[in-house]
Amino acid sequence: ARRIVMHEGSIKFIGGVAGRSASLEGDLSEANSDDFEAGLLSLEADGDATFTLDLSGLDICDGVAAATAVSCLRRLRARARHLVLAGAPQVLGHNLYRVGLLDGAGAIELVDMRLDEPAGF
Image (cartoon, one colour):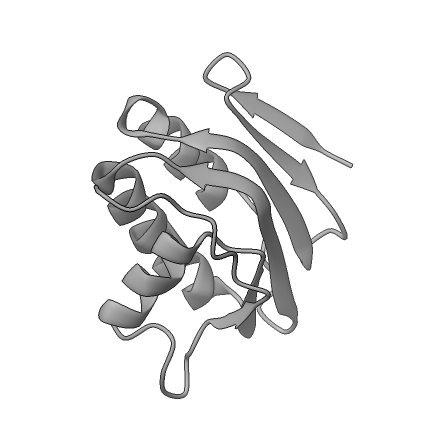
């Protein structure tokens, strides 16, 4: 498995099956959003396959981080036949819904969305 440790270990990208899956772990915030974007966009999504991203170990700490995640996931979705997010934080699911990425032909699929996000940002 490929590991990319970013911003002094605050986010880890763990490669699964090449072109088909990966996991993210850590705290995404405004401080490391540029590193997150670079790491997520470096993932190789096989355009002919479903790409599964396990987010069960990722926490989103602020609004800038949420906006960065949505933007990056939109671009990752464009490179995969189908994008599945497993264990996504509730705030991310809510923002993906608000911008229309959970409906229609190119919808991102949420599996086991977490309901443990703190409110308030």
